[in-house]
Amino acid sequence: MTEYLDLVMFAALMGAILLGFPVAFSIAGVAILFAYLGWALGAMDISLLGALGQRVFGLLSNQVLIAIPLFVLMGAVLEKSRIAEELLDTMGRAFGGLRGGLGISVVLVGALLAASTGIVGATVVAMGMIALPTMLRAGYDARVASGIVCTAGTLGQIIPPSTLLIILADVMSNAYQQAQYEQGRFAVEALSVGQFFAAALLPGLVLVALYLLYILARGLIRPADMPPAALGQARPGGAEMLRAILPPVLLIFAVLGAILGGVATPTEAAAVGAIGALLMAGHRAGQNRRLILLGAGALIALGVLAGLFPVRLQRSDLGPVEIAAGIGYGVLTALGALGILLALRGTLRGRMLHEATLSTMTMTAMIFATILAAGMFSLVFIGLGGEERVAAILSAMPGGATGALVFAMAFIFVLGFFLDFVEIAVIVLPLVSPSLILMGHDPIWLGVLIAINLQTSFLTPPFGFSLFYLRGAAPPEVSTAQIYRGVAPFILLQVLGVVIVWLMPPIATWLPAAVF
Image (cartoon, rainbow, N blue to C red; front, side):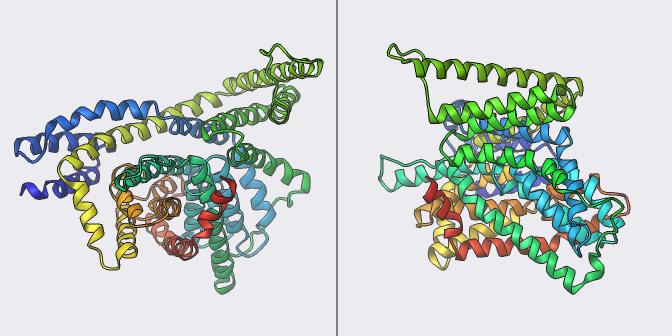
């Protein structure tokens, strides 16, 4: 019995989560229970738990994971300021007159919001409350409309910046280093969040293209499912389109451009994104708009000029040009600080910042509590011999490295029906990734495949989070069964996306190789 204690432990975790206990407490509780059970049965050395303190300290001092609350805050501020709603309304009126046009607009808005917020729940709820009723009034089949909204909302997990990619980058980098140690290499290489952001960008756009092609094809084959909308409002003009699209595009350019251009680390870029979202929200609040715009322009100019012509004011050999530049940079900094303060005042008065910080704290606490509990779980699982069992299972798969990867991807896909992406990423991936990398799979390509697979976990019933988010936001005439049936074709499209990236690895590996 004791030799199968690791498998019993994993089954007990699944049972605890399915019974509805809070995830972090379930993971930690099962770990503690089986640690003492293994110790009592002589199957585990309890002193292994002494490494837990190091894991906690490592998590709290992890520079990569600091980006998570900042990116979450950026998305929460954009959601609470209703910038997403304006974007949805404008794009809906732009494309609504086409057959399937509302569906196209929802996917495009989902892609823009994914690249500027990265929060699945916020995007699905916003589109469920705004776009879904519009699509139903236009005569869309409820299943099709629900599937489009759910799927477009999940793009926030594969199109950078996203919390999934940040967690995945940390896990895969650790797995890659572990694989290198096992190969006898001590001058190990590490992987960065920026590399995974670059790697996921093109696959994310491939998924967007697959969704759009499916909507267009279904509109042609079954036109009754997606009729053109009879728009009660005029189509937006160029100025209105620009006003709706420009803010999120500028934010995407500032954040992803800074990371991919090597100007800033992901954590620094996340801070830039949070400040940019705050300035947009303050401008939308309607007070001191010109001063906030002036402050935003000053910050942009400061970033560009300081990068092109850096000045170190502490040096003693400064000439008049450097001194003048330093004074100019000081003036730009003061203007930027004034814009930020005015934006803060506007968002505080409208209570936008209160709600955004509350949702940021809630989501960040959930993610970090899960990662902490998973660290304890993996310690006990390794102590019970689980790591060796996983490596033996993968090496015994027929087909060698390819067979092992097929098994791992299928296993992750099935787990996605029951577990959240955070739980899979921090519990399962550290166990399977080192063995897969040792078998010769490129870690960045492997990470992107897993990311698309984990994104699917938001759509797979019965516990897909996007399904729950939409169920809470959808009108009462849309049934849960219709939502489940609506996402089925998009789950197949996700599988097709995995196959495309599998067969054409340069889709995932070309951009990080070119940029880094």
